[in-house]
Length: 327
Image (tube, rainbow, N blue to C red; front, side):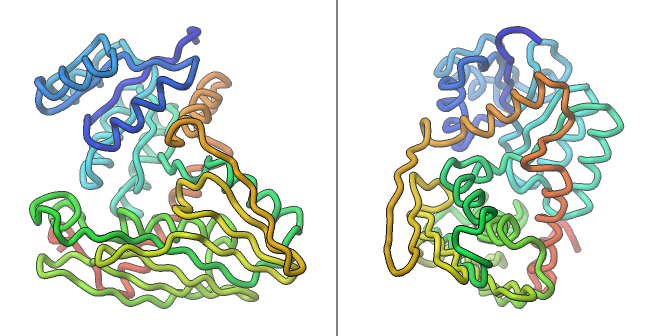
């Protein structure tokens, strides 16, 4: 592989801007192509970030030979279709979370990756956040003893958004759970694994989307209390408590810049600022995988993504959260 790994962005929306800015911080990567359903939008984005190639359709980028890997940054509802199409064209893919709307979609994406022998990873950037990585390592070393309790929330006020937009539109798989509830569920899964039982309840908006969900994940020796919502700004410091002490991920924990440890009633704070906003770490993981010919990440495997979407599916089943296109 060449000195520079060439990226293409599919869908130049808000999150793609954050990704493109952090890509500039990764020495062996470069943005070479952008695709949008609007050539004007593709041109505008490409001009801003210095991408040579721009396309007014996704298919043109899939059929091109100017990229090594694609970042799928479109709304949830198109992740599966676009990722499968890209994989079928032999393109490595980093797909924004959630990888699919449900487990069936994720299974199709994994099957396409395996069929074509191409790299695929879910863009769950928090998995690679330095503080989250460090806290997971410390827990593995027994620093806080056996974990008995975890609390993580993610919420902001979003009811003033356009009801036809991604967040509040059921046709676009809107609501809090898939967009931000995935983060607390991810943290519980990362630290405690798959729960034995789940309890959950949701509140719904007039458009039909779920706008607040509270969950309890039950484990043999632990509980995780989790929540997501679009009705208020929640405190976003995550707590992981054990038999010997506690670890705290600083607010906003999913993109945290540090953590704290409380051992024997003594609190110690640690700063671990991210490089840029924090997307560079998942980009570096993709580069490492591509350079060694790996078809998936060992740090966030395809099975991890499947486990995560199964948990989302179970919560949705319990709360009765469905989308019109599923009926």
